[in-house]
Image (cartoon, rainbow over all chains, first blue to last red; front, side):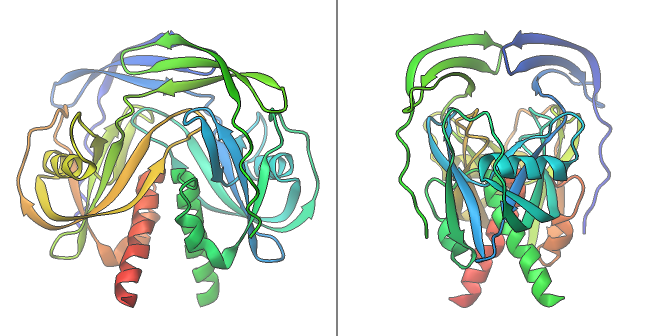
Amino acid sequence: MTQKKHPTPPKILSSEVTARSKLFHVEALSLEFSNGQQRQYERIKGSGRGAVMIVPINAENELLLVREYCAGTHDYQLGFPKGLIDLGETPQQAANRELKEEVGMGAEFFKELKMVSMAPSYFNAKMHILVAKHLYPEQLEGDEPEPLVVVNWPLSEWRTLLAQPDFTEARSVAALLLLQQFLEGDKDA
Amino acid sequence: MTQKKHPTPPKILSSEVTARSKLFHVEALSLEFSNGQQRQYERIKGSGRGAVMIVPINAENELLLVREYCAGTHDYQLGFPKGLIDLGETPQQAANRELKEEVGMGAEFFKELKMVSMAPSYFNAKMHILVAKHLYPEQLEGDEPEPLVVVNWPLSEWRTLLAQPDFTEARSVAALLLLQQFLEGDKDA
């Protein structure tokens, strides 16, 4: 396949935080590309610790999803449980904690499917997607303003899930399809 | 399947733009949830017109990808061509324009695979993912500071693409896997 070499990355001539809110810091970059072109770019800085998304499968071969209020779209969206990695946590520890907070379950088995990024032109937001199996009930207190609605979805009905109008988050969509790849690999093995 | 009812969305008590940069407006929301809990949320406002991502397949059954500098991660990432929908454009018109700008190709056939969102807790960013076939050469001038590197990837090697360390963008991952679903549907038909 045509795998041309990576170009040389631009030089960061200067950077400055130009806007700051409670959650977001916008950084303006002055860049010089290897061909001499200069441009102003903006990016948003986060905690840098990354996040996890968990694809939990219970003993009845159901996926456990959550329906949660999303301020960006001002509606409820269906997706897999997720959250930021706390200081000192491994992705698997963060996954187990979030699963307990959001779904009321822990898991004995975790397997990372892939690490994905989100709009890397603007963010440095890495998310580890993990499948979780061998679940056991354990509730941890989260910081949600209202309890999340947990939705059990038969794994065999995953195509119907993919078509749901409130199942749109790209990382949940990727997670569901990565799970299919993972399960097909299991079948071949 | 357990499809519990959507909860009642919270009431927006007030909203205020608290930080503003060239590209981003951060809006602070005061929310009252249906159980009486009040919280402050932040979200980022965009153009609201949405974006497109194009999965182009040429006559040699190769995917056409681009390798592009991403300021958020300060590295080059491999992904499908994409861009914002301009005022007055349909998603398909935007897809054809972006394809010409980024890859130097137009397409006679487009089919929308799914519309995805990105972190809807914080953004209202809808992206239409379209497959493009029956390509023809046509270059349009884009606004890129350096020409994008176009990478031809044999469709049959898609699992290798999925494993590439610079192919991480969740929407590109979702697009590649949605394409597999689409092509399998074709085979069954």
